[in-house]
Image (cartoon, rainbow, N blue to C red; front, side):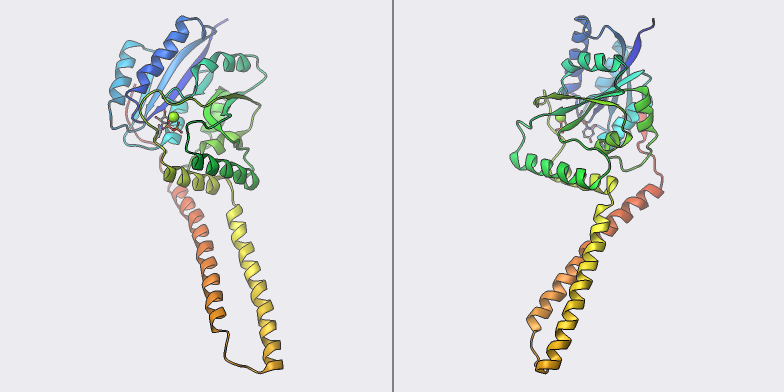
Length: 312
Ligand code: UDP
Ligand code: MG
């Protein structure tokens, strides 16, 4: 029987130091016969790096014909990188990995056995801890996952990594979702399929540094919510209804008070408070609306998810 082909997709942004180490680690595993049940193919996606990542890709390609790469015209983000990698992959199985070895390659053989057993279409991984991460970031992350699962139909697991192995079927399903605003954790959860979860402990990156600042993560979280839930819109309507109800009760109270006690001119401070509160809520709701409108606007433009500068 022919061996199946496994494509390893690696989105890389400024990973000139990590990428060679990553490649070598996989090669070492091959030499130790840990991946002998499949043929390998590499797809490195250079996400508009400013360092020598592209040169590293070219070098690896000239040494090893199983290495392919796509280089973007600018930085399009990891999500676009994953999409490009999936499009370029030819494997029967596909696995997405970070270049910094934070997704332990040692798990690959185990993932393969699950996929090869035919019982699962997808083997996903999650970190059980967040060692080495600022506590405040971990706290926000946990709250985000809690909230997300309440308000969205996509199954989004706390600590889930993009590190997952899937069959062609799942890869094609993900490719069929051509949206521009790609929140991959949501997309993976949304497509469904039989999925096996493996757990591992957090590993620090081998070289280089993380591309995620707290602020970037915060924006990412908001994008995730907007992409996979319309709950904030409903919340805006509910806010509106509550305010109407309160206003109605107030009107009755004021009418009754005026009829019984006459109309002394006071209540100015409370008036200011009410105006501020209501206009604040109105602005907030408009902001929520605007967020969705902006996303819809970008989607209707039908822009490509990424642009290629060089590919091999
Ligand atoms: N990455 C990317 N484009 C970006 C940011 C990150 O392709 O705009 C890649 C990066 O090279 C790495 C992976 O996504 O392979 C994860 O990034 P990072 O390690 O910085 O994130 P963290 O592990 O800290 O969440
Ligand atoms: Mg990392």
